[in-house]
Image 1 (cartoon, rainbow, N blue to C red):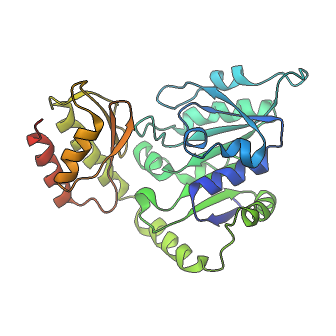
Image 2 (image 1 turned 180 degrees about the horizontal axis):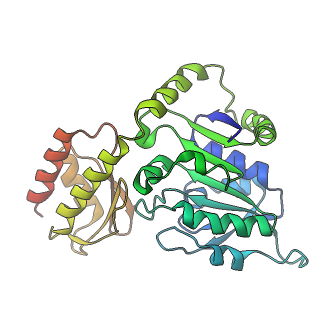
Image 3 (image 1 turned 180 degrees about the vertical axis):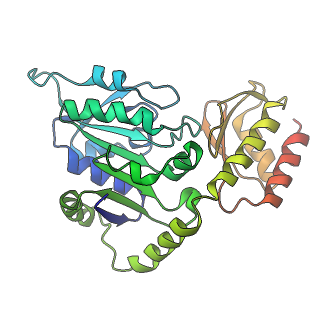
Length: 292
């Protein structure tokens, strides 16, 4: 894409994009599990004065038909005006499920036919690209804006970048400023991001392999009731009813392994740059021998 805007967080890049694409009394179409709805403090309403039309995709993945059915008729004043569609790649609450370009293209076509902007919350976009064996350059033709996280699997200390056309990014600079994201110290952080983009993208396949190994051990364990399919670096399990998430996490913490509660009886484990082969071997052995 033509230009980019560095921000301290992916929440800020998403919120800036939504604010720039919408206006009060308009509406954003997204999945119910999406980060912009679940984990950004109601920012769509607070920052943009917009509402949301929530869809229930398969593990967070929407289809063109679902999007088309959610578009409001513009001549009915009882409804907000549909202005933006937001996708998430990879889908966090979907266990790292991802869109391929073949799935994105028809959604983009629907958006263009109805004069809607299309935003990508690409928090883990490079995980999706590596898993699908696709090129980042091919994404620009489909989206009006893309948020890219430089930490997560890429391993930088902090930072996300909002991508778009030159005119779009010019508009977003002022929004970033009012949200407190205009930093004169950004050079050091940007340098880390450049290094990560040059050196840490292809190695994401290692994280995917380690996540698969975790999944295999967990599925064979008596304390796991079910597990979402593992496609990238996120592993989400549902514990058996007899074991609480608090009990499970405390057991892991005693073994110096950290994970996250992710819903009723759900636990999320994520592999990443700092999760080494030695750590992986230790974790797999610990999980195999875990008893309650």
